[in-house]
Image 1: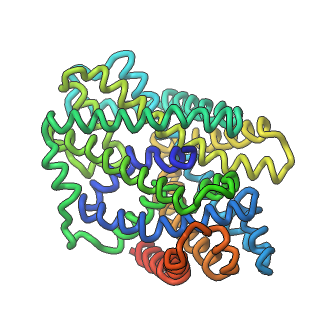
Image 2: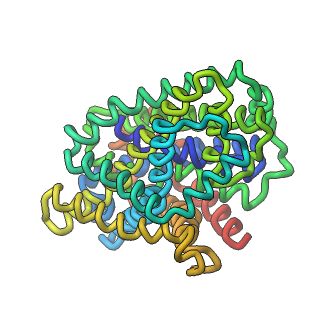
Length: 433
């Protein structure tokens, strides 16, 4: 459940709809599903087995497994790249969770009565322009995350996700069910499931693999960390399939929550990162019981964001505990505090320091590009190479003992040949445009 909580988050409900909107709808969804199951599943299995066999934070786990196979401990850099990706993503992610909490506050206190498309856009622009507001709500989200991490694995993380994840699924189903009767549902189905193959190109491929990795948590260190907590009696294959199916289901349900409202109210599906903040207030303003649904929706979004933030922070926190020999409480404060400092800069890049650019992007967008378009596909490639070529086959077979002979050989072929080649091609052609 903790792994599902890490995988299922704003990547599904906030990021998936707007990235799909920017990349042609159904064509993107088709490529996304192929990437999630054809590339994401084999790598996620590799991450979990490395974590469980290495019994440590991602760099330590990779180094231990490498040493066991007679390889150099310098392979630990593969795990280190995952930690860097997690930390970088967390800086950007915390700002978006801040937006969600702010909108939750708006939903509870004032609701969205009378809000139309123009008013919703103006409201979101006002959020981006309010320095103190963005900083405050970003820090609130990080404080909640820090308290859960501070509580530990059993009393903090597991206790939180066992309540939060089922609640999120129920709320998504309720909102998707409402949209079936409210209008725009058929247009959303066509948009999501009738592909135009002419729209598939290198940019779509990189966007799809980045979204798949971002959404299910590949190459972020989180799954390797949770893998180190996984008992030997638990099937890695079964766990990974549950995670990816749950993650995909939530992404599709999110599309059926967001896009019917987009088409019903004549809004633009390619709105970008602010899509749900432009779309959903308009829908809530016009639906019966809109106040209640708006509160439930942003509660659900907050739950999704917080559980993923917990997974991102936990993998870095585990490494800090291990590396510096300090208590969980001290490491949690150190990690969350350092993320908070950079998240403040990330939030200010929307206004005060927007003129400060890196490679033509503001600070926030530069971090987002570096983490999702560079670190995730490159990290996934290195994990596949390590599991397929550096690890002994007997070690991976031992960890995937519940697989049939055919199932294991299929995974081993994919992780050695198909996944690295696909990621290399997608990464190179996607980055050079």
